[in-house]
View (cartoon, helix red, strand yellow):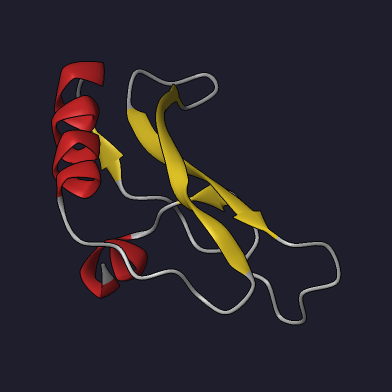
Length: 77
């Protein structure tokens, strides 16, 4: 697993989430809703990361898993 992109404060992470939510999002095959993004604290640390909860129909092949966003995920958005 690659390491998530981190932010120094929760406010910084929430600003990034606001930017993600305000942009255009194209649903992937089998996806029925745009992901929910939340700022979460890294365990035993003082930094924060963005967690994406994704929604797919049951039985969708190759559905993306929910999890932390890496810098590569953020560049693709």
